[in-house]
Amino acid sequence: MSHLVRSELLKQRTTRTTLLLLVWMTALILLVTLLHVLSLSSAHISSLDGQLKVVGWGTGIGALFAALLGAMSITSEFRHGTIRPTLLASPRRERVIAAKLLAGALTSLLVGLLAEALTAGIEAAGLAARGIHIHLGAADYLQLLAGGAAAAALFAAIGVGIGAVVRQQIGAVVGLCVWLLLIETTLIGNIPSAGKYAPGAAAGAIAGAIQTQSASQLVAPVLGVVLLVAYAAIAAAAGTLATTRRDVA
Image (cartoon, rainbow, N blue to C red; front, side):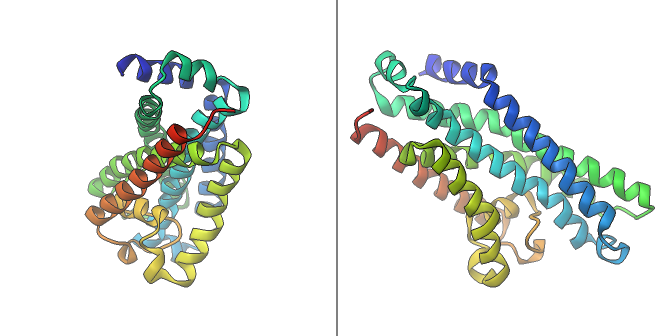
């Protein structure tokens, strides 16, 4: 099993897609965070809740790109036909999926950490430039970094599972983007009592901040972990089942 995980980690390190995802994530975080820090009124961004919503963009963006990384780790193989030699080298398909899940989670720990650190650093610099007091303390930053990394790792597992079920790269990528950027945002904004149990909101609960909802309206961090682990487990099980039951075209 360890050699499969090492192989998957090697693929992620040497594939241009991984680097491009990190570049796009960094650029998006820089743009979105600066836009909010520099354009929001002082009254809005001077509060703890306002500052948490800004750093919450790191949680959402980190989760999205971790899910994309997970999905593309398997859809790329179907797209380019490399899934055949992969499965020939390891005929036990469930072990291949397990390796992709673990490798994606390990890589996405760094993705989530990077996303949160960038967002927090850019916000702090922007607030300092505007002379606005920073209300976030050491405990807030610790939860943000650790929780954001953990949430990204679980979202990578969700991405792998969805990618294994859908198989089509464009469909998986578009589906994840539409869900996290449109459907879930609309759900949280219009039906917060239900939206707080959605995957993205659960990630926000773990990290202590999400861009679409006040931290006080999120579920408890422990419940957020339980919810996101359940979502990841369901997606992983569905992806494993789809891979073991369906032919590889």
